[in-house]
Image (tube, rainbow, N blue to C red; front, side, top):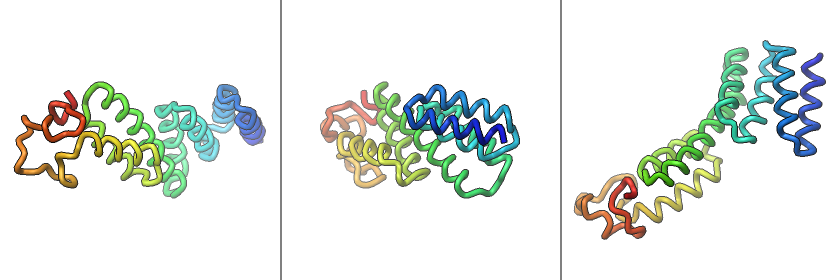
Length: 161
């Protein structure tokens, strides 16, 4: 019963936009009922929405361990992984690793086809950096060393340099 009150408090904090307090309330609920998969699921949702993908994964994996085979938990795990991949893709792109970013985004859209960030970023990067590709296969008639003359962004290769 203690966990139920703490979850209600966490939702109240979410309602007023106090994500730190909501997260703390969910953590207290986990301490109160460490074998309750629903508490871990709720904590994973809050961590995910707060951008704490590592904690979100920990919590949803614990929920899945405590209550295996629940489709909601499994699909939410995929959604967390997709969000994490999108975030990693952003960093990879900033660092100049275009092909890695695109691969991460493709994986994200596979894991969560409804992830709009992954879809939009993949479309943008593909349009900017892959005009020299036909679909997922490289054009055989273009030498990668000459990539920059075919890529609309003017980068020197698949790594974006």
